[in-house]
Length: 275
Image (cartoon, rainbow, N blue to C red; front, side):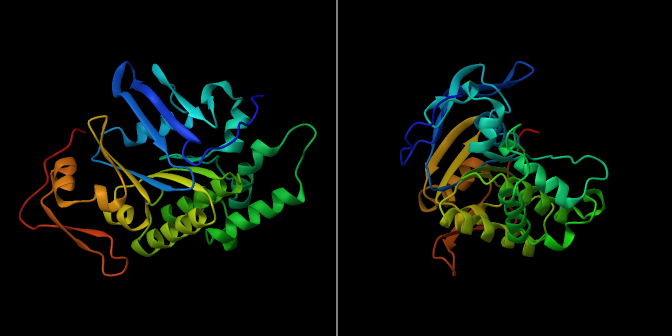
């Protein structure tokens, strides 16, 4: 098992010149990026621009054909799968649960990376599951089958499973999918709290105003390339939003946070992105 090197303040997770493809079709080419440790990084961009592909590459779900992803000073592919899961939690875009599994049993699967022949289920595992259920507001659902839940409830349960891994590095692919506005905000507030407690988060989001309000670092992508990255104030500008999304807009100060708030203009449809 690779030894854990000393963490730096800026480079727990990075990509160095990676190319990512599906069926030999390149989606991301020669891309380098560093995830700020302790930050809340949000990846934005139009459909099919490579956001989720980049996240899959960073999580080792998709191996680069060129370049490498580095986790804690080592090429990520050099770690055993369980070791990656102890260091990094991933919420994929389309997760599926086994038929009939209960919420409690699914969330408990987040503790799998911590199990081995010498270490079976423990009080620490039980407490981690309880914390995850409580944090996501799913404690009352614990005994229910996952397939009997609404889409929004299921999404919160998947987040709970990732939290149960008890890692301090979380990758989230469109985590607010299927949630109504109130639950979206509730979940974003949870992520902000986790970040404030010291966790490093990387999320793919479609909502620019969620990104602007909650992120400390934003990566804007288009056509498999990074167009801009930096603080919300640096990246979320009217000109940049038009460049990335083809959307006529104005950016005004958020009346709550003072950060950027994107207001689309009426009568000007955005340019269509590739499907």
